[in-house]
Image (cartoon, rainbow over all chains, first blue to last red; front, side):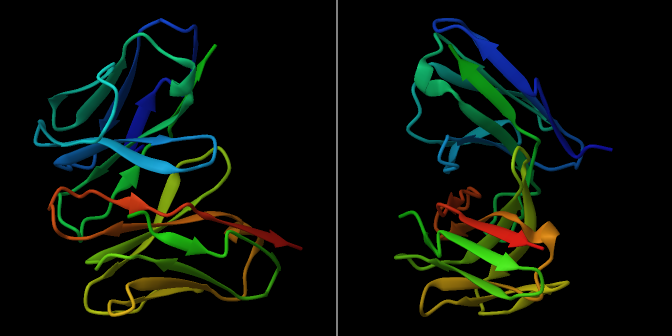
Length: 114
Length: 112
């Protein structure tokens, strides 16, 4: 059984469109994250939710809006897509928010904006 | 604030050893090591916690020197399956948000 899953795996779209990525975890974790990995493989935190509450909100354009309907799900909606949004987006989850908590990553969603 | 990994890339023959270093300019509470194969997700290897403990996982082990604010990942008798990009993620322990700052990655290629 997949621990952290994301849909879709690939997303190709035109500039200006709006798209969503969905994430689900079946590990019973309380905390979920969105990361962006650029073409140079730099992995950067974007958002984090703990028990459906937003706790990390990095310097990300407000075109990006996360939403957590429950502890097991975290979605990412992106408005007015730009070329620079092309990247691989990873969802991750951890039991809690402690510095001792391990984060487990989903398979990633490769977003290509044309 | 981003930890610095060295080397950036390394090529090995099967059976050779490698060391990957992760250095921070800030005090650390934990260092998390991941391996990512091409087109796949980062996979958790091990976590090193404040206290300087050394951990092991098969032929992969790591150490954490709090005073030097650095961690090292040791790959012994490397196998082809060890190929990939290794990332260290660091937590300063100050925010209690689970926020990890990742290094730029070290690409390891193991050849037959």
